[in-house]
Every structure is written in structure tokens, then in C-alpha cells.
Length: 197
Image (tube, rainbow, N blue to C red; front, top):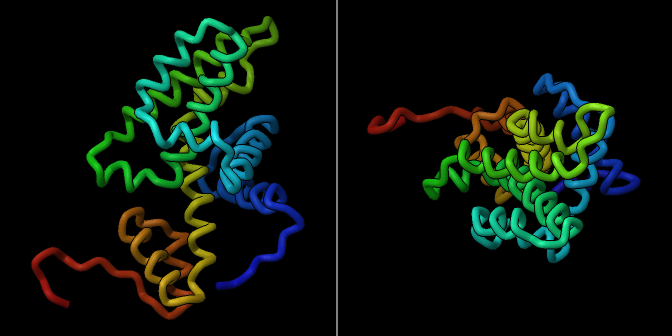
């Protein structure tokens, strides 16, 4: 596996997120871009609250967050849930779909969590960071998915890594992954079902 030199995890994700936003043609405020970078850096070394959003039923987490009596706790739970859904859909969307979980439903949970957090911060200055995350949730999932593809594409040095890249390409059809495979001499093609090639 190739080791990529980066001054920090945050620096690495900053470059990859900006590239992903250009690739996906997503416009975002500087605050939202920095937030995505920080979210990805946090999930590179998840702590207990970050990991919790992927381990328990998300509808239960949303209900608990919305009914938390302490406003600070409510806000934090909503933020952590929104982050978990955003990260999970971006990195593991194909896994959720394979298990029969509707991504549109998950997107609505993430949007609702960020929207509720945003409503707690409303000001006369207009939309806030969490309002932007809620309004552009689907676009940000695509950005995080592009970051996942870029990260996975770096693993083509070993046969196992190459297989992982190919399997993800089969599920996502990512141009970035196809390019990584082609650079290693693998021509990504899909077989028609029932036809041997």
C-alpha cells in the first residue's frame, strides 16, 4: 500500500474534500467545508459519541435527541446524529442499500437532525452552518462518498486492496475508482448477468 505524506489528517482531508467538491460541483461556505474536513478527521479516530451514531438504531437516536431535556445535550445529540448519518451514507451507502435500508430515509434522518440543531441556533443573520448542512445534505453525502472513493483508491498497491477497489467500483461506478483500477492495469467492466465472459 502506498503511504501518502501529509502533515496531518486534517490537511489530507482538506485537500480531498476540496477536490471532491469540485468533482461533484458542490458549492459550500468556507464554514461548511471546514466542518466536513473536521468531521472526516474525527471519524479517522472516532471517539465514543461519533461511533454511537453508527451502532444504534438511528430513529431511536433521533427521538432521544429531540426529547433531551437539556438544550445543550439536545443540540449535541442532534449534531452527532447528523454527523453519523452523513459519514455513514457517504462511506457505507452501498452497505446500507445491500441490507435493504433506503438511503432516502437515512438522508431524511440526517437532514432532520441537522435542521433541528439549526433551529436551536437561529439568528437574524440568516442561515447558519447546520441549516446549510440540512439544506444540502444529499450533496454533502456525495462529497463524503467521493472522499471515500479517493481514500479507497489509494489502496491499489496490494492484491487485497485492488480487489476492494474493484468491489466498491462495482457497487458505485465511481470514475475515480475506475481510474485507479485502470492505472494498475485492470480494466473495470461489468458482466451481463447470465452471460459468461
